[in-house]
Amino acid sequence: MTDLSQAGTFKLGQRTVKRMGYGAMQLAGPGAFGPPRDRAAAVAVLRAAVEAGVDHIDTSDFYGPHVTNEIIREALHPYPDDLTIVTKIGARRGADGSWNPAFAKGELRRAVEDNLKNLGLEAMDVVNLRFMFDVHGPAEGPIAEPLTAVAELQREGLVRHIGVSNATPSQVAQARTIADIVCVQNQYNLAHRGDDGLIDDLATSGIAYVPFFPLGGFSPLQSDTLSAVAGRLGATPMQVALAWLLQRSPNILLIPGTSSVAHLQENLAASTLELGADAVAELDGIGAARG
Image 1 (cartoon, rainbow, N blue to C red):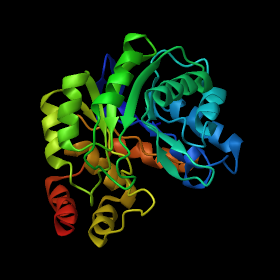
Image 2: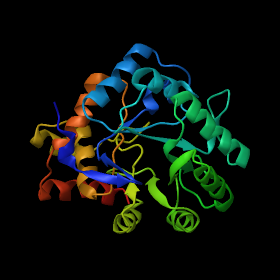
Image 3: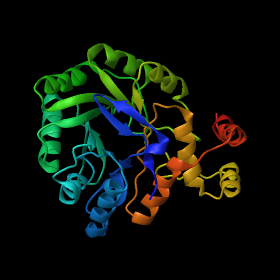
Image 4: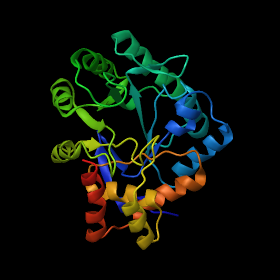
């Protein structure tokens, strides 16, 4: 069995988690909408992840909607004491599967309450407020009012820790003046390096950075350089991409997702893959080449 502790741990608020976690987005149907093709397989993946030592699961009630959280509860409730469950709010799904902003105070409260109900929890370990000023990536917009609403839920005891997602560096800075931010969840991977400076700034403050789409998301990473490095190491390109993220900065927490137990085991094995300086330099060139 893969020893996930080899990749180290990092603080997520008052919790300490292993740096290799699991993202539950792919447990719902295509595009994170509707039910999975094989619910029993989804349950099996979650149980296999926890049995392998995963203690950090990322989810959201807008995956499905509701589907992913209901599957997590079916598979894992009552939860292990050391399991940290992180969710996202700030969006709702349209009947056509579209992603729509849901920033109003009442919407944010309902989102937290729905997460708690569907997961079977009394309080969420971490709630990330996802900014939806641009569905396709971070964009400037007013965050004080919705973040203050989440902070109120924290004071009520429904939320233990607060993070932000899809955020610009200036929004992260503003958020930290409103609430104690324990993590930032943005798109980042070998080819998408726009947050390099933000990651380093957060590391100096002990704040976790959680890259979503660590393997490229809906457009999987493809690079001759990545394939060549993987071939020399006897690993898959995706394992190398995950190992690069783990070596990029100690505050990076990974949440690769899958609906396959075999793929889960492949992802987790990346936590033991060591990249030499030459390999890292080659891989760094992928992001530089793409600007």
